[in-house]
Length: 274
Image 1 (cartoon, rainbow, N blue to C red):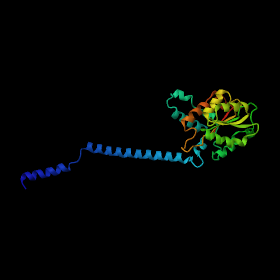
Image 2: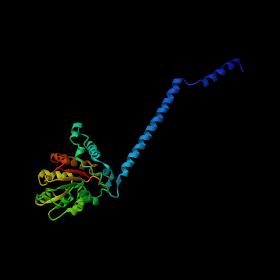
Image 3: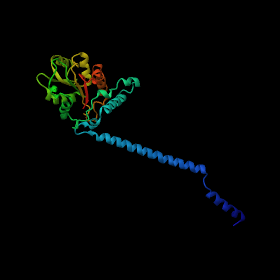
Image 4: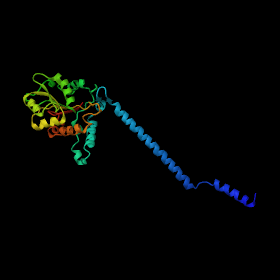
């Protein structure tokens, strides 16, 4: 080996074995640590999303056609949920405008004490439990078109099913009124209300408002409003989940005639979410 080779070989060894600069190693470590943390956060977020979805799905009883979540909601939780849906369905409104669209929790009666499934066949029993003097459910005011109970459904077909179930409370002096647009002209509903003593009325939000605006549906004898909240359709949607039903429902519930009576103990209006 030449002298030149002897001098160059150790130099090459030292160059290949020389450590990376400290700043380069630290930067690499930080980058790797950041990638690991970011991956962990994404995995946690994905797991949380799956968990929330699983909880929501678990509350849906597709066989019974109900969302069981509402049976656990007290007055405040229901008010918060309705407000949440309003913000979603009317996102074009300002914060101030939205404030006027919220139902106060004090206007909603707590029904969490009802332990049975909120299915159609249990609705009569629910009414009897929360009506106070349940015997009045079989009665009607002598004033035509002035029900003591209005049940609000999301669709005409559902309203018709509820009306059939409410026949339990129908007598010759207390009729159950079907107030929805499906197969029933508004003029026929107006004629019916103006000529018939009505104990319980079942209808959809828009039709109910139209009949009130006309004056055919009288609410001065009204004692309770029941919202058919738990029922879901084949697409897993209820009256509060669809914009076309939730928005008109909220408009109807927030009418001055009702708002003044929700919090009144004597002669007031019960607001019940079934």
